[in-house]
Length: 138
Image 1 (cartoon, rainbow, N blue to C red):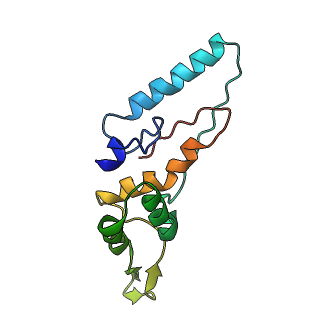
Image 2 (image 1 turned 180 degrees about the vertical axis):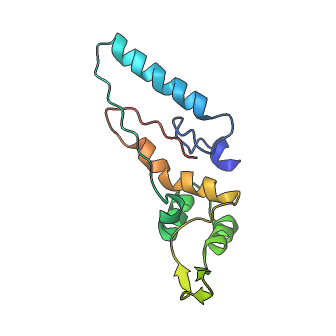
């Protein structure tokens, strides 16, 4: 895949990637902790569980990031088409809600959904901080 071959993703992005599973993320975390202990450094772990993460993806921002990573032209237009003109409606006890147009979110249960999500959050892993960020999404 182009994004993998182009090394777009951070080496510390373990979610939804081939040969980058939970056990490797955990090994990386434990190794980081051991190294800090050996060097006499403090270690702080912050673990975030982002609720409705896939639903929060802004389409415009995502498409701009894809363009930045080299996904342009026909490929970008196909993904745009995949995301646009989506709507949802709920039926409870035979009562139908209003039709809502979706401007946010990547479709779950699709092959592209997880990939688009990690593209969307990829910048977080390249922040210039004095710490290590390890990311796993499921």
